[in-house]
Structure formats: structure tokens, C-alpha cells
Image (cartoon, rainbow, N blue to C red; front, top):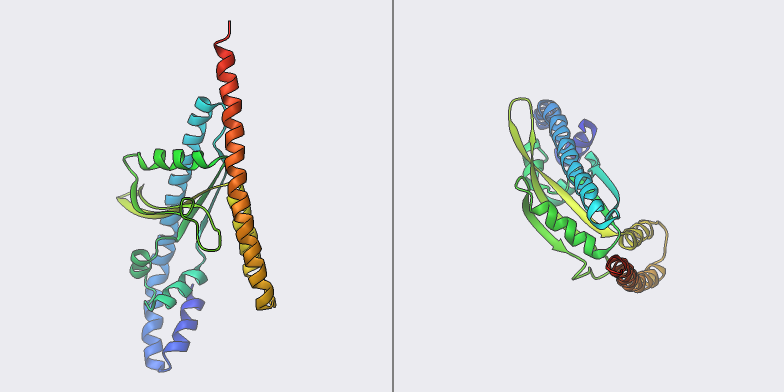
Length: 237
């Protein structure tokens, strides 16, 4: 973190006395920054545990696990600093925590679209979860075809001497949405691809997003038909 801060300082503060003053500020904030990242990690553990509990409970009710995978991450320091620089805000511990909502992120990959909304509703119904922001890119996909449900939630973590509220970004998506997003990300950041090729790939990816959405719908309908058949069999004598 110190090297990243120093790079920004060298670019923006040519005066040596100013650099020394900021250097002292960095040294002062290094330990608090590490503590803040540890708090975000604790918040991720809290949210991940909640989803694991929901997955276990709902597997008994539906005879299947609605969650396929859960992935979590803390945004890298370099990405945090770049984002703060784009916003034109000097990165202190306080400004980072108050400005950024996606430092702690968790991605929940579900079997079906209905599972996404069921799990989101179940999470938000818990009395220690507060919804800060919701963006539904399933009902209204992004221009490039991206689909997912994004939630910014606040949850308490319990430290040895106090309770602290922390923000976590939750992304819920189906297997096909996750596969599409992964492919789109890899193509987007490939270097040395001419613009005309990139534009062509973008059009094809958007069509793939529509195909994936149709597949999600069809697969869920098949699952419902299978469930209905099993329910009918239970009442046969």
C-alpha cells in the first residue's frame, strides 16, 4: 500500500517538503488501513456464512441446493487507489471507507433465476442486514448484455470491544450469467485487438447474452416440470 500511495504522491506533489508531510500521513495510516481490510474480510465471512446457512436450509425444502458456488474477494489496494484517484479523492482510511461500496465483494452463483430473487429476499429479510443499494441487471440488462443482481448491504461485525457496521457488495447470478461475464471480461481486457474486431465481438457477446437468458428460462421450466411430476406422484394411490 505504501508504494502505491507514494507513486500517487510523486505524480501530484513535486515539492519535497510536501512529500515528507504526506509520507508521515501514510505511515500514520498504514496500520489503520490493514485493520480496515481485516474488518472487510470479517464482513465477508459473515455474509458468506449467511448464504451457506440459507443454502443448507433451502436444500431441505427444495431437495436441491440453490447455490452452486460462492466466491469472495477484497478489492486489491492498487484498484482501490486507482478508483479513489479517478474520483479525485485523496485515499485516507476514512475516505476509502466512506466513498467505496465494493471493497468487500461476494458472488453467489445460483442454479436458476428464481433462486437469485429467493436468496436475495431471504438475505434482506434478516434483521441485521441493511440494504444500501440495489441494481437489477437481470430485469434491465446492461447495454453489453451483462446480467446479474447487485446488492450493497451493510452488516455488523463484532469486535472484541465494539460492533462495527461494514458494507459488502453482493452479486447474484446464474451459471450462464457467470460464464458469460467471465468470457466478456477476458475478451474486454485482451490487448492488441483492433477496434473493428472488438466491435464485432461485442455484438456477438450481446447475442450470446440473449441466448443465455433464453437457456436459463428454458432450464428453469424443465426443473419446474420435473418437480410437478414428483409432486403429482406423491398423491397417487
